[in-house]
Picture 1: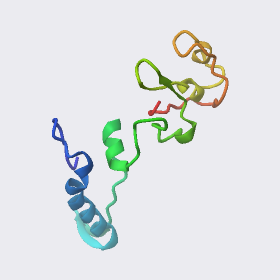
Picture 2: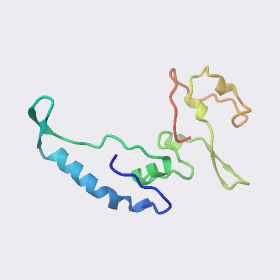
Picture 3: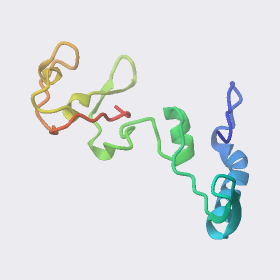
Picture 4: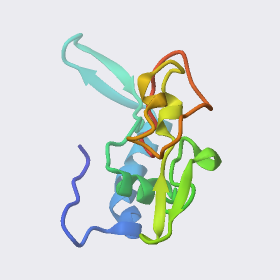
Length: 134
């Protein structure tokens, strides 16, 4: 783990100040050949390094990626196909339609009571996958 930032005074949009040294070091390790010793094989090898993924909550995802996790198009997977509606009295967006990512014969597609009083008919896959943004 490269870092853990917690508390009410997280860096928010200034996260680049914290990430800059890590990014510079990873860039150097990717572009330049670094000869490293492997103790198991007792040989030297050329090392390259890359950041494959980050583990973060949805708010941190917004800060790191620059994607807005608020408003109409909250889901980075669904993008413009995000199924939303405006809650007039709550004065905020609500996101429905997650069941469209389930197989067509899944019971939750017919479950009107637990969702928005509508049967989900569009979308559908042969395998189940989930959209974390909706």
